[in-house]
Image 1 (spheres, rainbow, N blue to C red):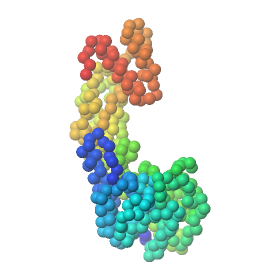
Image 2: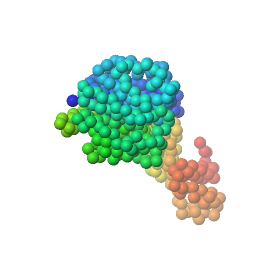
Image 3: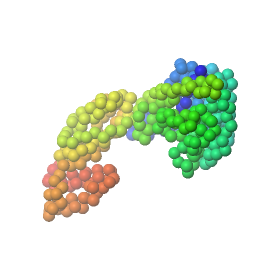
Image 4: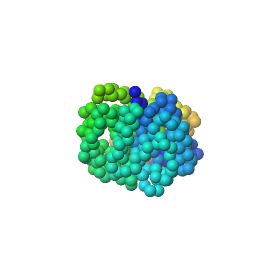
Length: 374
Ligand SMILES: [Mn+2]
């Protein structure tokens, strides 16, 4: 029964841009570590094929360290075939590692913009694929259906966008998958993945990225492991979802309504961390929200990963001061004038704008009251 691991969008050599430079470097190394974990998993599960659906590298420039790692990992599992479709971040250009570097014999790289077929007859699998040869790929290579061999397990590996007909990243339509008779379409490009979909007799899925790289890529990340078998033209297939990520990015709104101190904010964050099962593997972005006394002081920016039990934390204060808006609105002193001036921004739909206006009001009122402003 052929076993296939579908991964993609690894973006090796990504520059991480955390505020903490050392942690950025740690994340770059960890991304290589994630790739090694993927390779170990493939070996342990005795995968026959690993499909990498594009964006293996973050850019055309690949470090020597990364290239050496790839070559040694691929060579270290000679029973497995590695099938790579260059994507928009790592197109198969003349300068690219795909054309310049020497890979072991068990590595298959699509280099042409038109669809080509790899036949692995010993396991009855045909894999179709194509390459980006520049940063965009504006046609749909399935516009003209492919003629697949129904006795084989037919897989299309595609770095493509099925969500937008006008996409410049290979705009494909789901229905084309079924028309061509693919059994599975191993998609790359969209980083939030994992859902297995079906159209006609064709399964398809974005594998997502195996490691989040920013707060735009939240949650637990991994790949898709497929067991497939075809007998008398009938397909039996099942899917597993291994986790590969070393770290996870998460975002949380923590309501601190009614509290006053930094300590209380820290314990509210810790509670959210515990309740969600986060911990040392988590990079966390917290927005403190709710309505609090104007004298509340959370020192949000000073809250550390250490004291909240995560790997990395960013805390921003989006709380609103508890004030009597009606009274302020009608106040005839300078307090009322400031309030009326800020009111449109206090009610803005833009969270950042509201936050700034709240802060401005808080400081203005504190200053007028003769309080010390930190
Ligand atoms: Mn990508």
